[in-house]
Length: 201
Image 1 (spheres, rainbow, N blue to C red):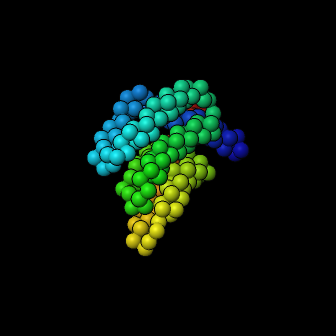
Image 2: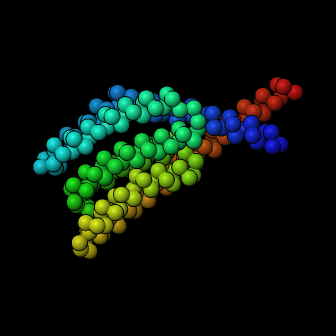
Image 3: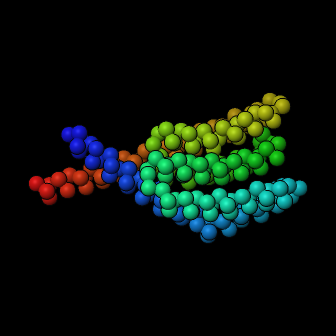
């Protein structure tokens, strides 16, 4: 029984490593860089006074993507792959949080960018619950610190509370999607092991 559990755990980690490698390879590919850069046009429309500062921040996406694309090829551990994926998501979120800090408006809609990063990372990367929680905290905690430190009246506090509801909904939705994927993946792996055992018998 213990042998079967160990075999399942090993196969689960190998599948997880393969999946994370594939996701990070696609999202950190050089083609992803222009996609991130396109949002600079939104910066010009909404905050033209900060367009050059925002462009400098968005340009950090280039070394981040190139570094992740290089490192993901070297990783051969499920735990390290999760750590890299978590750092990658948090690094991209820090760019948006830096822009939110420069805007100094608790009600800015730029928090939606954090939701996009959360949906992309928390929904599809097979994080364990510890890495899931750490990644979610790394994405959103700086935003709450910045937003609450800039809140000066009840109206701004109301905006932060409303955004918190959307953020909480996004995290819950991501968790449900992740849980569904993990449940399906585990069923497939158990079926694969059962078939392998039956063939051996």
